[in-house]
Amino acid sequence: MSTSPRLFCLDTVMIDVVVSVRSLPASGADVLASGQLLATGGGYNAMSAAARQGLPAVYTGRLGTGPLSSLALASFERDGITAPITANREIDNGFCVVFVEAMGERTFVTARGAEATLRSSDLDDLDVGSGDVVLVSGYNVLYADSASFVLEWLGALPTSTIVAFDPSNRVLDIARAHLDAAMSRCDWLVCNAVEASLMSGAGTIAGAATILAEQTQRGNVIVRHGATGCTVIERGSRPVAVKGFSTTVVDTNGAGDVHSGVFFAELSHGTSVVASALRANAAAALSIAHLGPGHGPSREVVTQFMAT
Image (cartoon, rainbow, N blue to C red):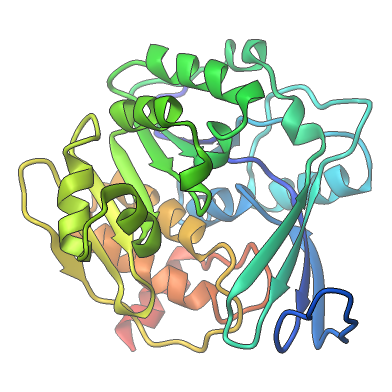
């Protein structure tokens, strides 16, 4: 078993088919994209961001067999991401069509593939240990075919393993029992302001963070709020607003995942929570200045950006 902290990512890896459009077309219409990209997305955003900050990443989902899976594996190899679970030899990975509008907003249409064939036995041999971070997505507990065994596996992890839960923009579609179970085990809830409002019913970011902190195992919450940065709350403490950074917004897809990857990488280096959040804000700002996923910057680039 490794003695150095690692990021274990359950958030599924898919291939993003990214198209830039002025605005979404009406039903039945036909528009010409101003940009296009085929790239590894999903959980790769957080893993690559963490790896580029010096935190080794492990993909705890399943890859498949075919051109899309080969593209994902090549991305893993570039960032030193390991994928210990045996690939599905019968089908390829799924893909997500991502429509990026002029202001950077994105809309998704997802087609599932090999990543949806993960089974409980696949998680049994993972050597997750003390100090490791397990990043769980709301998508992992959204679908009935994975929610029960993922939650059971999380519940059996050592208390010294850090569980981070990102409920995703489909938080309202997660069964209440599954959401409660994920919240009760997570050490860090990481979400955006819209998700925080939906989950808490609070009218302010600080209020939402305070309410949500009471529902997690260790009382730690990060609420991201775009250009203005994020708000963090640690157990027993008051919410702290951490400033954001100015940037050119091209594509917001994956920014939250980059934020999480950098934040937990910095924590693993012994950086304070607020300083880690500040670096994560900087990295997320850098990432959204590019089209498509996987644009988490290196640690050196983040440091240089923060110094300007």
